Amino acid sequence: MVQDSGFLAVWDSAWHMAAAESRDSVMAQVRRNWFDTLAATAGGVAENCTQAALHATLADADGSLETLRPSDVALVLGAASHALDYDDVCMLATCHPSAPPVAALLALLPVLEQQRPGLQLRDIFAAYLLGTETTLRLGQWLGFRHYWLGFHATDTLGVVGAVASCAHALCLPPQQAHAALAIAASSAGGLRANFGTDTKPLHVGFAAAAAIRAVLLAKAGANASDDVWGPTGFFHAFNGGAPFDPLPWEPAMEWAVNLPGFELKRFPSCYMTHRLIAGILKLRERRSGKERSDPLRIEIEVARNGLAALKHPKPATGLQAKFSGHYCAAAAWIDGKVELASFTDSAVPRPAVQAVMERTKLTERTTQGESLETAPVQVTLRGQGWIDRITVDWAPGSAADPMTRDQLRGKWFDCASHGGINTDDAQALRLLDVPLQTPAFDLLHPLRQTLLDAIGSPIQH
Image (cartoon, rainbow, N blue to C red; front, side, top):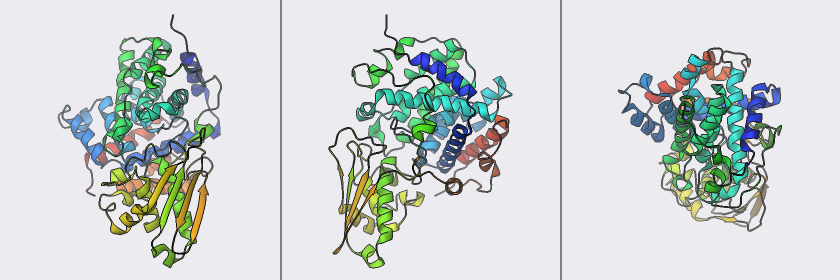
C-alpha cells in the first residue's frame, strides 16, 4: 500500500475553506493580486513570446482568435502575463503564483459561463485562492532543492495550482477534481536553464494550457492515480529522490496570500534583483551629482543561492538583462530608475552602463539556513575617496513594504501603455472596487477581450 502523504485530505479541506472565505483582509489581497497580474498581462501582449504563442495557435484555428480553444487562449494569455517578468512572486515556493491560475481562469471563462452562469467575482476569487495555495504548499513541501535541481517552479507547481483553480470554479466532484490534479502532475515541467529566453514566460502558458486540458479530461472521465501524492510520486520525482518529508500543509492554516503574502513587483526584472536595485537607488540619492559621474565599484552580497536565477552576468539582450544582477545594478546607478524601458535591446549595450557592469561584483554568503525571502542584501559603493553601504532587508512590494493603491494604478497605466491598450479603460480599474457579488462575466469578459484584442493587434515598439 502506498504511504498517504495527507495531501488530498488537506487539499479537500482547503477547497471548502476557499468556498467559504469572506474575510476582507484575504479578499483585499486577492483583489490586488488579480489587478497586478492583469497589469503585467497588459504589458506583455506585444512581446515576442506572446506573439509566437498566438501565431502557433492560430495555425490550428483558421487564423481567427474567436475559434481558439480555451487551452490555446491559456497558452497565449499565460505567456503575456509573464512576458515582462513583472508578475507577483512568493518565496515560499520560489515561484510566480498568480499568473498560471489567472491565465487559466480567464481562458476558461466561456466554459464557465455555459456551466455556471451565476458565477460571481467572489467565486472566481475563491478558485484563485485555492489554486495559489496549492502551488505554494507544494513548493513549501519540495523546498528550495526543487529549484536548485534546475526546475522552474512556476511551471512545475503552477500547473497543479491552475488545475485546482479551474476544478474549483467548475465545481467538479471530488473524484474528478483529484483526477485532474494527478493528470496535471504528469504534465508538470519547466527548466530554469531557459531563463532569459522566450521559453521562460511560455512556461506560464504551458502550465495554464495543461491545467485546462487536465480539468476537461477529468471531467470527460479520464482517470488518474492518487499515488501521485505518495512517496514515489510528485515529491520523489521533483525533489531528486530526497527522503519523503512530512507535508507542511495543515487544515485551517492561514492562506499564503496573507502570510507570508505575495510580493508585487515594482521593477520588471527577476525578483532576486529587486533588493539590490532598491539599495543602489537609495545610495544614489545620498550622493552628489559629481559623485554620481565619477567611476565607482559596486559590491553586492546576497544569501546563499541568491544568485541562482541571475544567470546572465554579461547580458546581450533586454530579456537576458532581466536576469542579470550586474546589469540591474548598473542601470539603477546610471539612470536612477529601473523601468520597462530599461530592458529594451538598445538599453543594454550603452557604454556607461557597460562600464559600471565591469566594476560590479556579486557574491553569495556561505551562511546556512538563511531564507531568500528574509535574508538581507548588502550593497557597498566605492567611489573616489568615499564609501557608502546599505542593508536592504525587504524588497519593494513585499508585505513589509507594500505597493500603495496609487502605485498599483500607476503600474496598470504603465503596462497598458506599453502594450498599446487604452489606458482610459475603466474596466480594469473597476476590479479594485466592485462588490464581490458582481457577476464575474460582466467584469472579466470585457477584460479578457481587451487583452486578446491587443494581442491580436500588437503595436510596434
